[in-house]
Length: 252
Image (tube, rainbow, N blue to C red; front, side):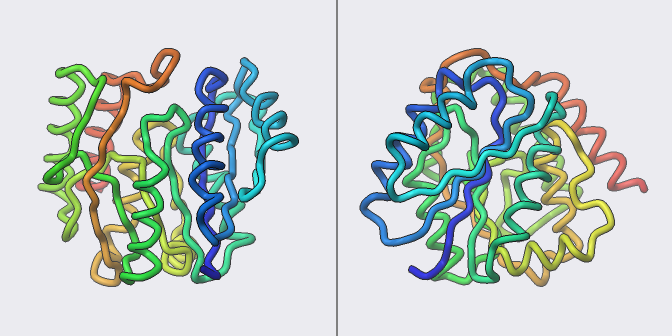
């Protein structure tokens, strides 16, 4: 493939997970003929996340390139995504792909590549790893969080319907650079949410252009049981911010 894949990975205190994730990248893509650029956006980590990435970069990485972008303090997921996307928009070609995913091993590399191929070969513009498709599975997530997440997704679907989209809060996505970069340039404030509600907000920013974009969802095998360390997401706060987002975007 001539296309490049940019992986934007917001990172905050993932020292327990980062090496295992990088080994998965290295093992998977050494079999693929494609250029991979992993963009780690360190959002003010206070552990050894960066040191581990730097060490791996020096000793092990063969088929992948690694770029580290640093924030002086913890600004939140939305700001980290903004930093990562701006870097990719600067260096990516129109036919390249941007993937956003977690660094805690709950998202799988093989699914990310299936999503990329949907963008490259099937002319999809946004591909989402969805919890609400047939054959989707979730391990290691408590029932309360499942219920609250489903309720939020349902409200987004009611108020901001996008063809083929059910999971509005999934942060595991693949984007065609050409389409997303053009919309970003047209938008005054494409990345306005700073916290975990940023994932839903990005889709709401794409909502006015939904007739110009092709959306696709693939079922995800979400492995929260593989992550080490405590979750960075405060579920009640995130649900509140998502509900606030629906109200603000719908009313104003």
